Structures are given as C-alpha cells and as structure tokens.
Length: 254
Image 1 (cartoon, rainbow, N blue to C red):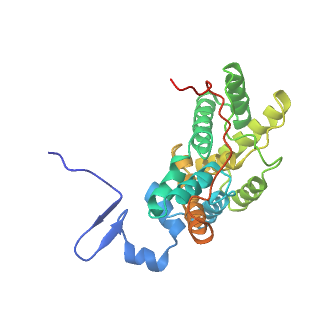
Image 2 (cartoon, rainbow, N blue to C red):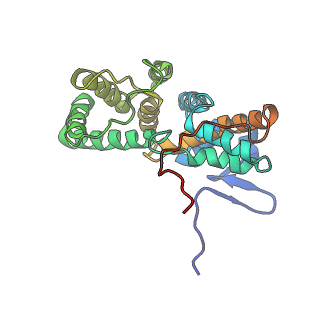
Image 3 (cartoon, one colour):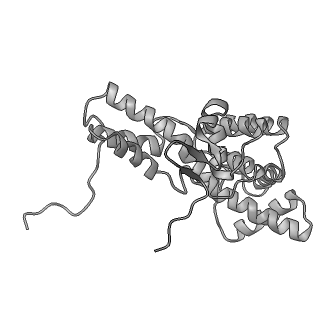
C-alpha cells in the first residue's frame, strides 16, 4: 500500500515543521497570517503581502448575522446546544457560488482572460473586454461585480489602495477595474464587491483560483465562531422561528 504524500507538515517526537519551518520558530517570529500564506504558497509573505492578506481576512470575517453562512450557523446553534462544531460546520456548508464562493470563480475568469492576453499580446483592459463579450454572449452572470446591499463596497477601494501602496497591484487589479468599467457602459453599473477585490489581489500575489474560496472560509470561520458564541450566550434554545405559508394541496383525511 502506497503511503500518503504531503509537502505541508511533518513532525517527530520533539518537533513540528510546516513547509520545513519549525513551528516553535514560527510561533515566536511570525503571525497567523504569515502561516496561512506559508501553508498555501510554501513561502513566507513579504511585509506588504502580509498586510494585504490580513486586510482581506478582516474584510471577509463577518457581514452581519443575516448573511447565509452566519444565519445558518445561528439556526443550527439554536436547535443544537450541545455541538459547537456542528453549528460552525453548518455555516461553512452554506458557502457556495452565490455566497463566499464567487472569489474563486472570479479568479478563474481573471486567470483565463490574462492567459489569453499574454498569448496574444493584449493589455489587461483588452482581455477584460474580450471576457465581457464572452460572458454576455453566454448570458452568464459576471462574478465579482454587483452587491445586494452596497452601492459601493467600502472594502474595495481600501484594498486596492493598499495593494498599490505596497507594490502588489498587478494585472489582476487592472483586469477587474476594466471589467467593472466596461460592464457599467454595456450592461449597467455593477460595483465591484469583496469577491472581485479578493480575486484580483490574490491573483496578483500568486494564489491559484481555488484560494478565493479557501480564504473566504478561513476568514468567515472567525465570524461564525463569534455568531455561534453569541447565540449560545444571549438566546434561548429553539428561539429562531419564522412564519411559513403552506401553499400545497389542501389537507385531506385520505
């Protein structure tokens, strides 16, 4: 039987290493954000990369108890007072393409568009135009653009300003800014959301597309644990109730 293989972590009787680095050294000299970066990319971040990833994680930690992941976690906590892990897991399971998962889809869009641009000598703006043409022709919703609550997502400008100040901004940000501008002209105003900013910055830092969803999950777990803790501390069991209108066949005795 072939053994499992991993390049992430190992240990012996007295030591633990992550990507070849001593855990005790990391504990003394690194941050949790450094370790997330190391785990996923196999290297330590630059100071600028650390600040950007830290800002992204903060920006995605929580968005209110009504967000699908938070609401699901609190509903599970309301009905099950004995399993913290199941309530948090329920919240994670609510994350998908429409909530928290658009970052990965946007990263894939960026990566594909920029790969074609490089092959054909196009600018990021021209690549964004071509991508918009393809998405409109296929009648697909553009990931990373539009928000149900915000007319302007306040996190996007802060993140892009930080990325430029730290010298991290690259073709991913240029692509998304061009996509947003062209969509406003050809479809309607669709403000870039946190998923679009996340995707652009993670792309420019060298992360692969699945990292868009991974990083949202890492960040949102912090918020979910707080939501579950508050549900247990402040509310009674089974307190979450909502009105349900039945519109099926009339009840009979048959």
